[in-house]
Amino acid sequence: MPLIILAVGILLLFFLIVRVKLNSFISLLIVAGVVGYAEGLPVTQIIPVIQKGLGGTLGGLAIVVSFGAILGKLMARAVVHSASP
Image 1 (cartoon, rainbow, N blue to C red):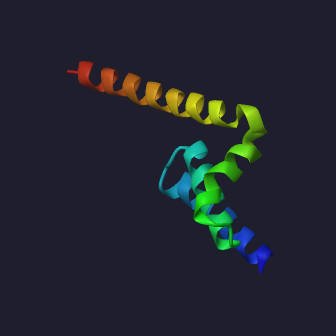
Image 2: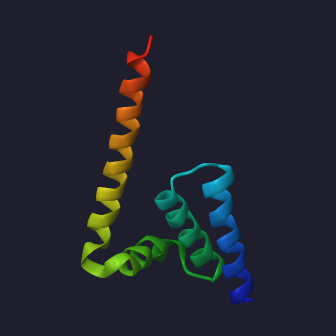
């Protein structure tokens, strides 16, 4: 069963990135949570386990920096689109 859950997770990751055009980092976080939950991980442990997997001490910082970069890119696009005639 774990291999089936993993395969479905990989397909979900491709779907979110290719079809939905969701940011790949956000897609990876979503799929990691879904696969963890499907494997029986308690909901309260999903975020800490993902942070631990991202690098222990730097896990929380990496998530904050990545979301900051995504937000910066979105803001830059908004400025470009609002400045267009």
